[in-house]
Amino acid sequence: MSQTAAPAPQAAIAVEGFENLYQMAASQFTRAADTMNLDKDLRVILSQPKNEIIVNFPVRMDNGSYQLFKGYRIQHNNILGCYKGGIRYHPQVHLDEVKALAAWMTWKCSLAGLPFGGGKGGIQIDPTKYSADELQRITRRFTHALGSNIGPDFDIPAPDVGTNGQTMVWMMDTYVNTFGAAHKNVSRHVVTGKPVSAGGSEGRDEATGRGVVYTIAAWAQEKKFDLAKATYVVQGFGNVGSFAAKILTGEYGSTLLAAQDHTGTIHNANGIDVEALFKYAIEKKGIAGFPGAKAIERDDLWKIKADILIPAALEAQITSKNAPIIDVKLVAEGANGPTTPKADEIFVKRGIDLIPDILCNSGGVIVSYFEWTQNKQGESWYLDEVRAKLKRRITDAFDRTMRVKAQYKTDMRNAAMIRAVDRVSTSYKERGIFP
Ligand code: NAD
Image 1 (cartoon, protein in one colour):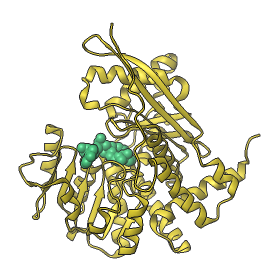
Image 2 (image 1 turned 180 degrees about the vertical axis):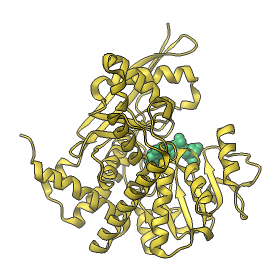
Image 3 (image 1 turned 90 degrees about the vertical axis):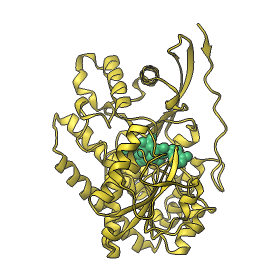
Image 4 (image 1 turned 45 degrees about the vertical axis):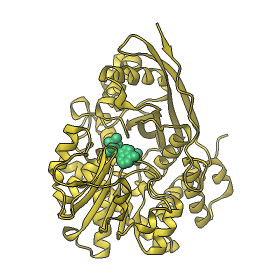
């Protein structure tokens, strides 16, 4: 039996002006805290996550050898409810990255008015390099290693980059067989983002992309801007980017000019057939080579003039380097943390609006909350009910953010953070600090 050691945790990836992504996330919190004059003790309490869980676990590969993996689960805050957040499988997964993503979940759930706190997890692997059987064993062993650190009324994972509904079913099945054998069917809400056949909610697969579009629609209404005449560009054509495009074009009539994923960047000045691209990307596992558009250089994506830019891939994609050349009216953050604070400042100066991640992509966790609620109550809601409830909740969060923006005369990112921090700080003030 051969065994491959777990990869040494790679050095944190520096983000423009910060040593790592967590520092960037913390700076957004500090800015909001300064603007709202937040109590200094609460700043201390909220400056670090509550729990940082790191597990190393061995998994048998298809060739009979064993490999050791390192998995993370960060539980940032649970004053408002259970820890809640996705599981990421990506080669760049790092402790500081997961901490940042967990913190953003706390603020996202708070802003959306959900009874959830924030968490996030992941494994530093490239999932495309493993067979489906290996991924299943990795996921089950990771879930087992996490043990009672997750649970349906304690910490509830969901999909994120590199994971999907299948990953969630493996997690659920492992969890209920380990802990809930006698109550198998009442613990299914240990994860959300499950396929409908395994207890998932109608509309969860499209939820984040649909939420992105609902926030864009709320912005367009505010600006009296006709989305049927709008053009847009999307970076990332996975779960979030592809559904956002499908809905923005299919239901609102906007035109997709360019798209980028890890396989390539494509452009068509006359508009890309989104339905055809959606099917192509699933079949070919990427958008490169799509016949209805021409290939362009990666960096040229940012030069394309359009009304809306939807970053829906990874963090820190928009920096002070490309923000000055981005020629759009609105940036709608499908991804978490795609824009650095320096790029934020450039957009504010240039009069480019930005719908921040904790608002823009909250549709995923909102419908995860619906899934969790349905599982707890043994209910199954219709798709039109899910969509209507999502629209109401995310539009409400948008309106509240706009009110705070006007109150503090600030930008939308800071306004959304202030609203989110305020709900958490109110809860701390009511409950006090134990003991
Ligand atoms: P996904 O794995 O389904 O898709 C990720 C996409 O990004 C893929 O198209 C991939 O090719 C592309 N990509 C990866 N590296 C890239 C690179 N260097 N340049 C260009 N494109 C690249 O993941 P997803 O679930 O769509 O998540 C995308 C973003 O949205 C992440 O920031 C995630 O945290 C965030 N998000 C996801 C959800 C959800 O419900 N899935 C909810 C909220 C936020």
